[in-house]
Length: 219
Image (cartoon, rainbow, N blue to C red; front, side, top):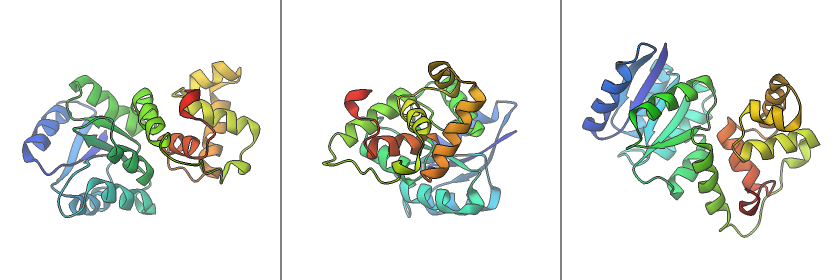
């Protein structure tokens, strides 16, 4: 059973998501929060598998709530998915940097929302690779200089894998591209995440762009 925390200051939005999610046999909504502070507290209380967190909330916004959840070792199993009305914006990038595993727009199709929750629960945190990649590329394109710190710790294979993750490839696709087994590809990804202190694949993408390993022009 996938346990979900909903965090949104609009009760109608929460009710709609709850109705949709609760209708699924493998998903259970364990708590609802009306602000970011409640989201953090309820995450600690219920330890959900997935937290769907709105960006703009009173008391504490979704970015700060995400940062606190992601930095708490007790909540290492909680995968935060940011909900936004606006699609590609700087708030989403900041949320990914804070530790969110991915994001979805609130008007996404119900089937896509359900699939996103299931994907996040598995730990495949990059929910929309092409959209997230575009967002990061657009943001990074405005940065004056890349920050190469950390890349020296990676082997050549790990650098290659990290670049492929940043381009949106799954482990199976990376394995086919590099002519290695999916298990080996997954191992390389995990080692790169560990060395770069990335919480999940989404943060690995952020770091790939920030360090200049991948550039907007190389997408």
